[in-house]
Image (cartoon, rainbow, N blue to C red; front, side):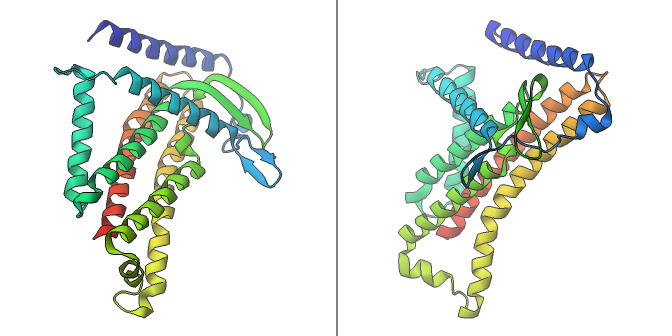
Length: 273
């Protein structure tokens, strides 16, 4: 383990310990602890409403990805550990796409899309394993409280809007690839296969893909955050919440990012078949 790795682990452990100590100072009653559970800070601009926390944390994710990309842009002939892990990850994804996508012309674009989605979703999920700034809203959407190290950062993927945006993007791209590969007439004809009476069922089946794609990730990440919040309150005097943060943020977050990206590859491949 290098000196940088030891410093990083020491900082992470120190942040966890600080969060635990701060949480020990104040244990609210059950009613007060859970009265704001699930409430978000919402800002309305006319008929348009959005959650500033998602935008703030998504910006942090982009900055982390940018920093990491700049730190590994100078590739070495003899790779170090970081470069070896990246090369293994990229090769694994590329081989997965190559084995799944039937048309070689769409292997590289599909790989770029799936890899981009995986990096963003994984980094977003990792954010939920670190204690940070927490914004609490009330029923009317107004900001009522800002907490420091009282909970983990809210993952952008815990907001259904983020996941649905990516799922709809994949939905549009997959059909655009299908039109380019098959031609518009063949693509349009596929909606009426095996016969015209199946057209409504085919339409429902396609529309269900982005819905299930986004809800699967949202349910796991948001549900994990709620479970962690509940267990954190129930066992304040123990260090177990730290391990819960790590479990839902790192282990479950990695699995869900992988599943989400594999579905991206599967949906695009299905349209090209």
